[in-house]
Amino acid sequence: MTTFTISIPEELKRKLEEHPEINWAEYLKKRLEIIVKQLKKFEELKNRGELL
Image (tube, rainbow, N blue to C red; front, side, top):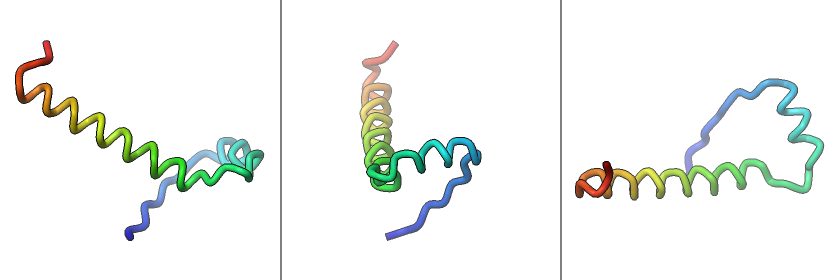
């Protein structure tokens, strides 16, 4: 598996740390997978001419 590193503002980091029960890395990984699937679907519709 590959590592993906991002930078976030300190204020956002503090807010995330207020919720240690949430695995933020896992949450972001799943959200990115959803976004990639949505983009793929969008491209398929665009290529078939089904989008205006």
